[in-house]
Image (tube, rainbow, N blue to C red):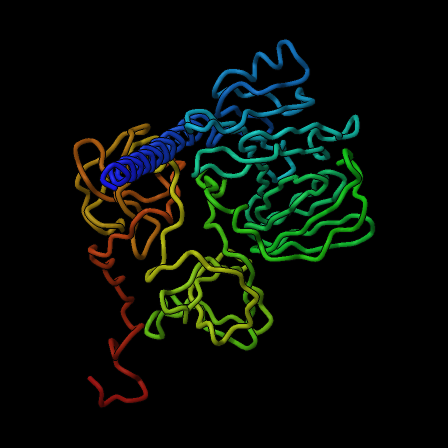
Length: 445
C-alpha cells in the first residue's frame, strides 16, 4: 500500500509540474504575441492609401521576383496594383511570428483590410478597373496553439461614415463598418463587428449587423461563385471575436457581444449604468443597437448606435436577441489604445511653435513653449475641450489637440477631471441685468 501511495503521489506531482509548465508556456506565448502585434503596429499603422504594408514575416507573393522580394521585408510598402496573389504566414505556437498584412485601397475607395495569420487572397478585378475590388479569399483551417491568437481571418473596415463596395468570393459586399471574413470548408462566413453592411448574392440582399454573422455556401473547391443565396443572419460565434488585435485596425473598435438590442420606445442613452448618470441622447423607437457589454447585475447594457455613439441603456426597456455576454464591467471602459509607443507619443505641428498651457484653454497662462516637431508624451485629455495633457521639453502642461500629430486613440486617453473650468467669457455691457437705464422706466437709476 505504501509503495502504491508513493507512485500515486509521484504521478500527482508530475501532473502538477506539467500543468504549471503549460501555464508558463501560455503566459510566455501571450506576451510574445503582444510584442509581435506591437512590432506590426509600429511598422504599418498610419501608412498611406494605395499600398500593401508588411507587418510580419515574408508572405508568398505573385508575381515572383522584384515584387515578392519587395514585399518580404518587415515594414515594406508596395503599391496595391502590382500584386496578383498573396498568402500570409500563420501564427506560430510561441507567438513570436504572425502574419499581419494591411491592404489599403487607393482613392476613392474608402476601405482597408487586415490579414491576420494564414490567409490567401487573389485579385479578380477586371482589367482597367481599380485593383483588389474583386477577389478570392481563403483562410487556413485550424488555429494557432497560442491561446491568445485570433482565428486566421480577413478584417475589412470602411472609413467612418462612408460605405465601400467590394466583391469577395463572388458576393457583393456594401461595407459600412467592420466585417470579419473566414472560410470554413465550403462556406464563407461574414461576421459583423461594427456598423451595418449588406451582402448581395444570387439575387438576394442580406444585411449583416454588428453581433451577427451570415454564411454563404459554395460547391466544393469553388469559392468564386456562391451555390445559393446568403443564409439568414445568426448570432455571432464568440470564437470569431476572441483575441482580435483591434488596435491594429485603422479605426480600433470595442469587440461586440453576440446579438443585438432594439428600442421599443424612446430610451435615454446614459453615461453610466445608473439613472443618476447623465443623458447623452434620447434614442427613438425602432433603433437597432450593438451590445458591447453589461453591468454586473445585468440590468444595464452598454450599447453602440450606428452613428458610433456609445452609452448605457436599461435592459428592461429594450427588445433583445443576445447570446452569452462575456464582457461585464461596472464603469464604461475606454476604447482600445494603440500598441506600444504609438499609443503614447505625439509630435507638435505648429510652424511657429506652440505654448504649453497650465490648463486646457487659451485663457490659462503658458508654462512654456515647444518648437515645431517636438516629441511629447500623451498623458490625459480634457473633460470639456479638445486639448491633451502632455509631457515634453522638461514640462507638463496642455496643448490644443489641433497642434498635435499622433496615431494614438485620443478617446482612449484617461480624462483628467482635476482641471479648473475655463473662465466665463466677459459679457457685453447691456446683454444682461440692468446695465443701462430702461428709457421706459426712468425711475430705475
